[in-house]
Length: 186
Image 1 (spheres, rainbow, N blue to C red):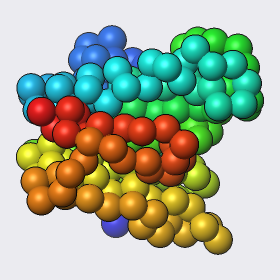
Image 2: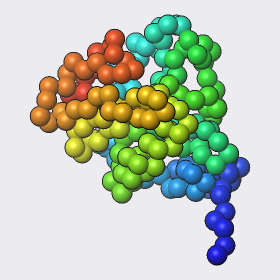
Image 3: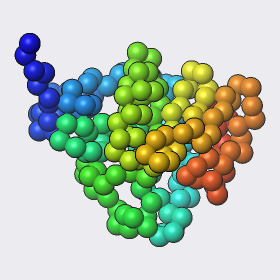
């Protein structure tokens, strides 16, 4: 039995010259799903609500970015739907592919790629020690927020916005900031 070749960050750079919708997950080059309106609207609706946090410096300030590639290792460089870094850890505006571990990652599920977000990414981010991981499903209008405790994720917050009022949510790590998921889900 032949060992599986693990692709590296250099392979990712070469592949992206031909197709920009590729990411490196556990040593595999994975084609990203075609963008769709539900995903784009949820991503834009959420990222727009974080704009006030950009204006804050130091304590309470965040760099929140969409479609950002993060290099966790030579064999793992996903492109996150949204990721954030506290300005107290990263005071200068970031550039290029990120090498610094995010404080928060949010993935928005895509049909046919749910396993990557709900299982593979969750386990990888947990192993790398990302403190907060959110998983959003625009189709189901759900949010699950995971928080790292003792090297394992636990559910810190979960909501289904079809059956709950989601206009005034305070979710870790943004517990002192009100988010409107009714707006995010349209």
